[in-house]
Length: 123
Image 1: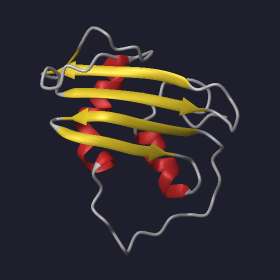
Image 2 (image 1 turned 180 degrees about the vertical axis):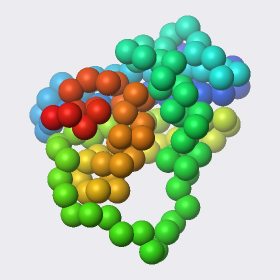
Image 3 (image 1 turned 30 degrees about the vertical axis):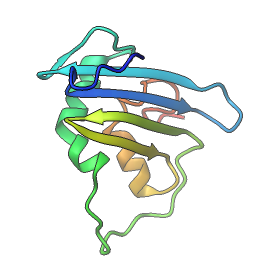
C-alpha cells in the first residue's frame, strides 16, 4: 500500500494469522468522509469501515480499566495486527482470542479482521 498521509481518514493494514506457522492474510481498509476508498481489499470494506468508525476510538485507543474482569476462556489461535492511521492517530493494535475480553474485541471488529475462518469467532 502506498501511503498518502492526510488523504484518508482511515488507512489501515490488517495482517491476520489463523494459526502458528500458517500463511498470513493481508487486507487494506481505506476510507474518507465515511466512504470506502479505492484500494480497500477486505471482503466487506463497507461493513469494516462502519465498525471502525463506530468503535475505532474505543478499540484502538482504550482507556485503562482496572476494574475490568475477563473470563478465562480460549477462543482460538488467531492473531491479527492492525497498523496505520485512524483520523490522524497512529494505530498499532493486536487482536487475539486468548480470553473473554479479547474475544469480545475480536467480535466487535470481525469485519475489519477479514471475515475469513476464525475472524468471526466460528472456528
